Amino acid sequence: MKIKVVNIETERLLLRQYVMEDLDDYVEYRSNPKYHEFLPGKPRANKEEYRKGLEKLVKGYNKHKEPEMTWAIVLKKENKVVGSVSVEDVFEEHKLCEIGWGIKRKLSQARHRF
Image (cartoon, rainbow, N blue to C red):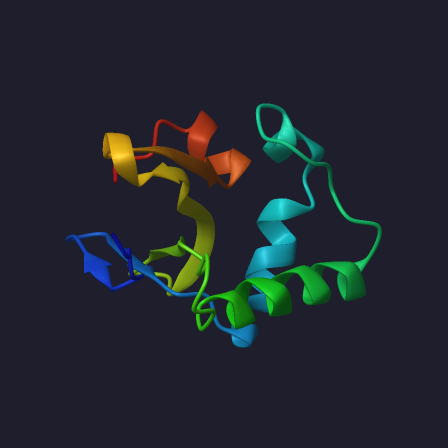
């Protein structure tokens, strides 16, 4: 089973592949230590480290083995990346996978309607 990142759109959100132009938004929501509270990892040291991480993610979409399966969550009315959702640990034989997500802390606390 091969899962491909295709655009998913709702009234308020667009889920799509990350692009390098998302760097400022990516840094903004991921640099908050509270964002990582229930996620593996921790904030990176500087913007260059975030750039390297985003670049690796973007390049991963084109891998033939274990392609990247992460969607950027974009608030459509602001055209701003505010988080991500990903499919991980795919177990094809059992037709199971894990889904993880992270949202900009300010939005998760505001009970934002998506």
